[in-house]
Structure formats: structure tokens, C-alpha cells
Image 1 (cartoon, rainbow, N blue to C red):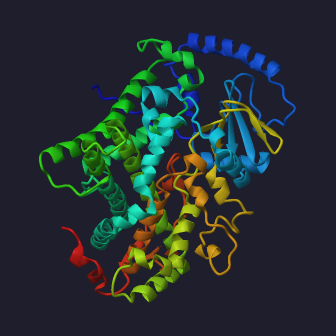
Image 2: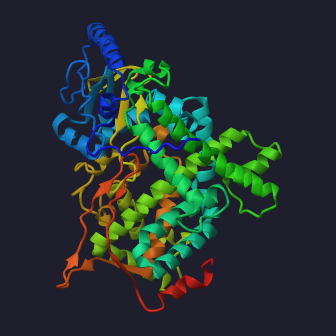
Image 3: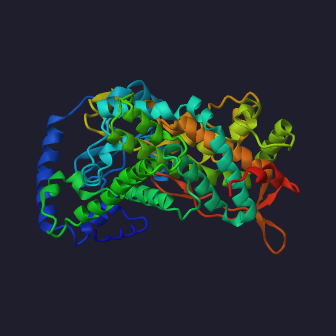
Length: 528
């Protein structure tokens, strides 16, 4: 297949307007589309008048609406600023399509949890669903029988009881993480990435990633990057559907070539790892029991209700999503401990009281480590890995608090806004695990994993991985800021990048053993 390199998106430039203004889109297509949209816009305005209040939002221009307001970067922060002006619901209209950002925990809970059946569908995204093939992946699947079956399947393998059965795997990968950080502490970010990827890879497929250059890790990273590009870039065909019928050789239809390239990566991820497992099984290569191997065996014995395609796509969704979000949370944990030395000290003291510095923490210690649990929950709140939900579609018209929601409206929950809501969290910009303890009334931020039918089915796994990582790293290491020539501590400014999955910008710190021979806690059992 011909290689096509994805072009970098210009900073602070709306990729949809970039697509429209490029030489790729013919003037005829634009003129014809705008003519049709003008008529549709006028007719809709006339026939859909309502006594309900319109959802407020930034003023747009005729026909194009808020095309030039759409935040292609720092979406969560931009919507948070709009919240201060327009309130808990913010509407943008683009070429006749309505998109409503939800910023209030009350409104989000009402629509996505209490009325989940009405607001759990996905909008029609022609590029990412039809051309890239993401419609078969659980996060993008339309709400219906296939979605419910896949979700049931994922819950069967990701609930807390199953996770406890894999404690030996968490321990083994945790020890390898500690050995890596002991040998090359400056590469902590790479070690955390390998920990997340290898753990997910072994749980799902049964084989491990030895380093960050492992082809399975690289393929997962590339697929997630291209999938994000496909979902958030605002492709013209999603707003002007008839463009899909134009032949690929016409100017303005270069997106079809891009879609084919991205689809090749998605297909390679879906089938490649699965086929490799199948080949190893046929060749008699020993593999650890995993999601795929267990379900292959059940299918062969006629004991599974899931077909091969369901196993493939579910495995891909678990591995791709878990490896990316848990790596992001791991980096945020190190940053949080760096900027809040007091929280780090309290967590270490609690761990020492439980383990006596004679062993590493175990899952059974979790109830005895309430402060460490608060440390982990505060990481998820302070730096939510997924700050904005994927778009939901209103299956029916409705209202909330007197505001009108129309059928087929696109609804997006800004989870970042909840994390910064002063009615929910005191001093929300500050990383402070104590907010959940000592009689604190602040609620545990379960919302970071989403709501209703679209809540992350891997929430238990995500928490377990970050808790395990925090327990191991803080048992062995101190995390300190670098100092300047005068001995002054240089704390980094917490800054984050990414839209679908957000992570800290690169930062520096000094990671050292907490005491001499601290490596005795882990080195004997580290896998070579």
C-alpha cells in the first residue's frame, strides 16, 4: 500500500476550516453546498420555532454559524471559559448542525445517566465511521444491540474480581517498572509507557512488550494517534454528506486517501495482534491466559456466544484505550507528586506503616491505604486523561431546565469543567488529596470515567493500574524538583496537551532511592 504521511495540523487552526480553505475542496462543491444550506437553514428556522429557551452560545455568522469558533486545540479549557459567559450549556452551530457542550455536573448526570437511553447514541461521523472503520469499535459503535453485546463482553473481563486474579501480572510488571526507573530514572516517562502498554498487552493478548520500540506498542500508539485525527479533525464530509459521492480523483476529495491510510492502521491493529496469537497457539508457543486466548478456547469448544469479529474488536478497544489513558495518568501522577511534596510524604509514610519497608504493597493492603487511594483519585480529577467525552446524539427532542434539545443535536460533556467546578471542588486548580479525607465533603470524582451507558467499562482496571503504580513507585523512590545553580528548586508549571487523551507536557524531575538498598524490595523477582 502506498504510504501516506498525515500532515501536522497547524497550531490553533480549526482543521475543518483548514479542510474547506485548502486547494483540495473545489469551489463548485463549496458554492453548491452553501446554496443548499442557505435554503435548509431558512426553512428550519421557520418550521422549528419553539417556546423553550434556546441554548446560549457564541454568536455566529449566517449559514456558517460558529465554524470559525470551533476549538481544535485546548477544547476543554476553551469550553470552560465559555461556561463563565454562557452557563451550564453552550451551543455552537456549524453549517446547520447543532453541537451543545455540557459543563454542569447536574445537567450531564440528568442527560447522560438518568436519561441515558435517549442520549447514548453517536452522531453520524461519515469519515471516521465509514471510511476509517471505527464504527465497529466500542467507543464509536451506535447505541443498539451490537453496542450492548460488546459492552457486556467488556464488563465480563474488566470487573474488579477479574482484576484481582491478575495481581501476579501487576506485580511482575510493577517490578520491571521499578528496575527501569532504578537504572535510568531520567527516562521515567518511557518506563511508565512500557508499563502501561505491556500490562495491557499481556492482559489482552498474552504476550509482553520488552521495550517502547516493541512493534505492538508502536502500532497501538500509531492507531490511537490516527484514530484521534479521524475523530476530532472536523472533516468536511461530516458536515456536507453528499461529498462522499464525489470520485476520489477530483480536487477536494483527498480525504478519501487519508481515510484509506488510517483504515489500514486500524485494520492492522484489529487483525494483526489477534492473528499473531492464533499463529502462536497453532505452533504450540506457550502463552499466558489472556482475554483473547481464553475466548479462542471457549469459541473452539462451542461455549462462547461471541464470534471472532467481536473478540477482535473488543480486544483492540481494550488494549488501545487502556495503554494510552493509563500512561497519561501515570505521567500525571509523577507530576502531581513533584509539585506537591507534602502529599508525596504523607503517601510514603502511610505505605511505610503498612509494609514496614520490608515488602512492596499488595492488593490486600488497599483498605489500609486510604490516603494513597485519595492520591490516585485526585490525579484523575486534577488531570483527567479524557477531559471531554466523545460526542453523543440526542435520539429524541427534549428539554432540560427550560432549554430546548432538538432531535439529532450533538451533545458533548466537558468533564474538565466538573473537575474545575468550585461548587464541587474547593480550590480546584490545586492538587490536594486531603480534600477527600478527614471529614471532607467532596465527592469522589467517579465522573472522570463518564456517565451512563457510555461510562468507561475499564474504570476498575484503570484505577487498579494507577493505584498499583503509585504504591510501587512511592515505596521505593523520592520525586524531587531539579535545582538551579543557587540551589533553588525549579518546579515545572503543570501544562497539558492532547484532545481525546490529554497528558502532561514533558517535564524534568530528580528521582532517587528513598534509602540505600531500596532495590532489594524488587530486584530478586524482576524478569530479565
